[in-house]
Image 1: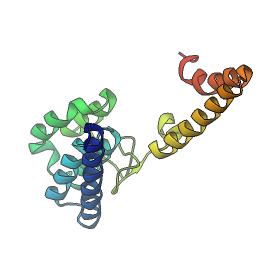
Image 2: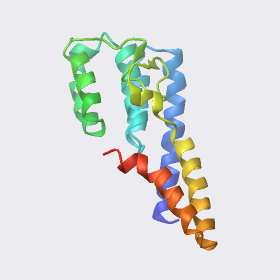
Image 3: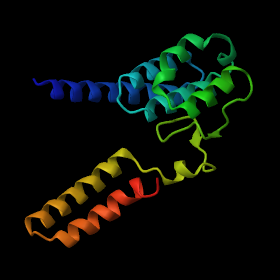
Image 4: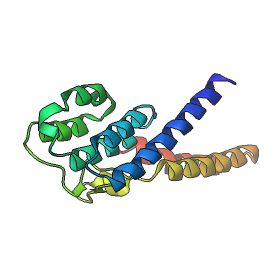
Length: 169
């Protein structure tokens, strides 16, 4: 088994464990053990979004624990979170605010809370599955245009796909 196959298999196992504990958290929202196991599984995933969703659910479901003994947990996970997300969770730890049912800290991976639509980038985000499909379709179109030596189509596809990422900066 190659390294990439092993990595993919480990990722699949971590996803299964994450989903298993997601169901447990949904059924017992105040069970800290289930939240911690879900966070541990999320730490094994390469994406940041599942971890953020699991932590947001933990902060919502176990809100009574947050001001007292989450510093060790937060130290373990904070480097895997975006700075503005770290700050949001830090405000909860410091008792400046609590996670609400609709929160900007929630993600599509959250099971207890919902993502807030107040933040523009949350509304525009698509799932990684959708992104893979879009990338696959664009790659197929690009390869076909290259094979046909249709340089105009290649330029058009590249401008439509890449320009929103780089031209606005």
